[in-house]
Length: 381
Image (tube, one colour):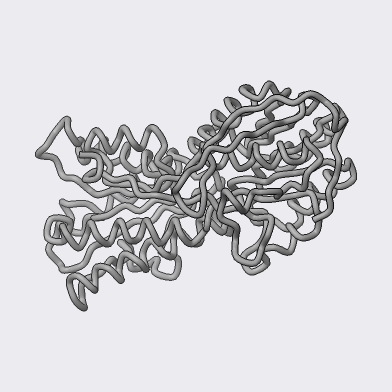
């Protein structure tokens, strides 16, 4: 990548120390300096997303500690709004863009945003939501030498969630199999159709779980989708692509009118692409007296699994209402983004030194993966 000098390179700098993930979940102290004349614009796809809100808090804190001028924008799940906001920020003199794109995986939208940044001669760092279609990873990122993406390995979260589910079910099969039919019926709530994170979480959560269940219990023991009429698409998608608690709660309430303990066909496991949807599913279960956790030790408990390890999910796990989640490191994601912006503000290449502290996607030198980790009930005891 060619160097692009931003602003006055002799400007005074502010510095702070951040913890950088290094080759996994290890951390190391790294001093970050950022030019004081920087003006950073940060764009969020939706202010109602719990995990994105945790990244926002981390970015706000880190940019504030550095004394950097920054402006936050909430697109409220509208890509056209976000594009207009980017135009506004560039017109107002932004020296760097940090973008949580609305339409994840959209080649057209991410390319248009890149072209805006390229025309303005400023760096753009995308985060959390993929900017390239499945099978075309790296193509858009290679089109501009002053851009990068900070996210997570889209396969890893699904595999880890599947392993967590598989171990739990193998250890508790008879308890989980409420109707004693030898199968475990699951519901799957998908955050967004076409989103690479959602696709891989949906696929590997079930595949990996079934692999571990079969290894532990033998052939014939497995997870099966709760509604045989919907096996072509064994998941329910948030129609707004917002990964929301409301969408999962509505689906779960509707599901429970037909699939319940009284009808001997109860949904026995709930798998969610994120913790917000897990929260919504638990709210629906609570309304019919299930998953009361520590409030009612004798109630029916349906193990619910999510991804993100939000504060709400951690509390639900502590309250005995949720079984587990996969932690997505908001602080680590923010730290990687800020390190890149600091590089650019000081006239360095965006990715200078990043590979020393973070995991890069295979074959893509400007895509960073933040590692996941388990967070579940038994672990917290």
